[in-house]
Image (cartoon, rainbow, N blue to C red; front, side, top):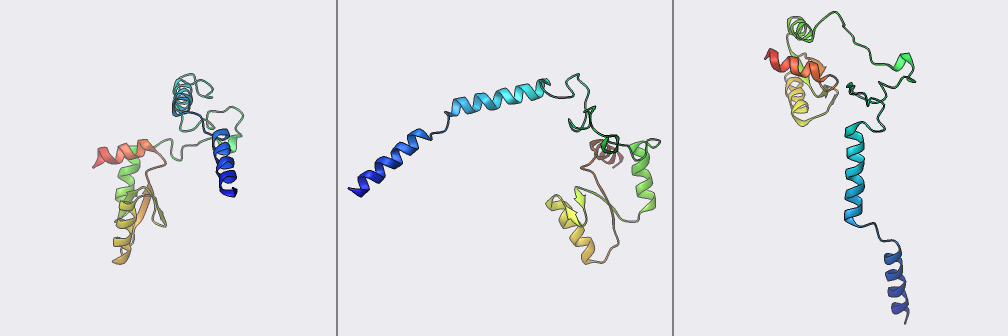
Length: 137
């Protein structure tokens, strides 16, 4: 008797707590994607590009606006200068203390194992720098 009651209770809970159908969920996700990609509700809907919506927000305090560290130098100049100034330099995903991919972590481990002094630059922060490194090599 107790088993019948518990089974009925569980079935009732399952029916009342059922998630929306997969079609409804996928339609909702598709609508969110379309709204985001078309710029609806996005602070940068005028077609300009920025790395985040916050950076384009006019209410963001000036201290938190993105800044360029070297506006007078091109990315190719930065890459050339990095290569000239550092005997061993790794353009990597992350930093030697906190690599953000397996290959970067392995490269750092190997160089540290042989006590090679290394310098590193994170390429994830700026896609233009990453492209300049690719073009330079």
